[in-house]
Length: 83
Image (cartoon, rainbow, N blue to C red):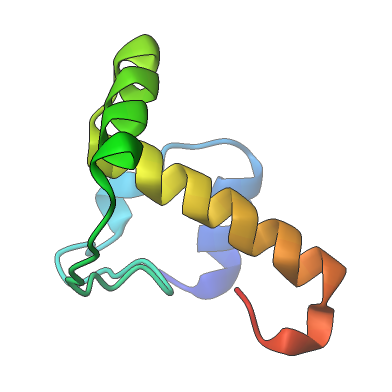
């Protein structure tokens, strides 16, 4: 299929997922890398309480809060290279 026809179908809200090979698709800037961080016990307990209130895991709340803080820092200091 030519790109022009593909774009036309997309623009017309036709389901094009069957036309895509997503077997090797990757999300940009989403590669995972494991890190170890030591937190004081009081912080772990607070994280667990907040995660429980939201119904998510400790790891999830840490990721979300760090992402929010990094986005805020990027807006405050755009030349810092934060994503």
